[in-house]
Image 1 (cartoon, one colour):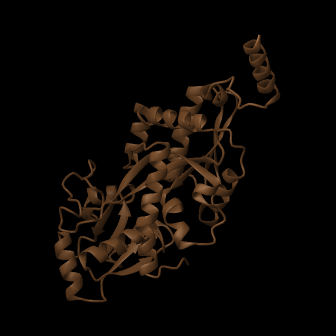
Image 2 (tube, helix red, strand yellow; image 1 turned 90 degrees about the horizontal axis):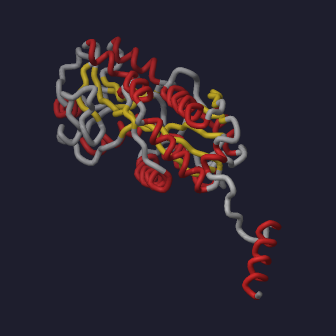
Length: 328
């Protein structure tokens, strides 16, 4: 009788919300219950947009629900980021974001209107691209060693282009300078296109950019790739050495993109979404799309993804501070 009474009491409390609820619906059933919105806080056509559309298509196929991509550019991504920050934490509103917004901006911009871990939960990364140090073919160097030697022989005269102050490519350039001793001045552009054009035209000698930006120009001979900044060689440019192979250790970084959900999204929903992303990025359709952009599928899930963000934030912070990098 006592046990029966206890069970009845437990049941009554559970029904009344007095005990932690055992979810009647699984995480998958929860995700299948409504439409998805994938926020891309940058313009259509770039890597963020492409990955957002890969994710939306995969979620539609998995859950038979509409998944729309909502491009919300502006304020360095903050407009779209704020939308997801304020969204209902049920797994149906997701943010696709590049690494810089997660690992550099918190140090670069102390008054950011969001906190990576205070307002969001890391779901998974989706893909990455190697960064490339390239030169105009008229620059008389064919190796990183020769570039460093040339820069030292002409101090204050050689410059490299990046897509903006505080961008991951700018910081990659400063890290390269620190580790190699190269004497290179930084020239910041607003985006990759103009810096690329000026390097192609010979206005600037050196460009640090990601693989999708430089690949067709390296293949056509309009740029000469000296090294990739990743830990391993790129399958897209297998004859181009890593910086470590070129004699510059301790520089192993790439450009990557990941998915966040609003804070307080249930852990089981986050885990299910991470598993979904892993499945999507292993599909042939996704592989074809990312390879067409010079990227590689790369999925790091949930807690491990969070640790990746923390590790890279700690790596970039002293570089931002030591070089007194201030956003413009």
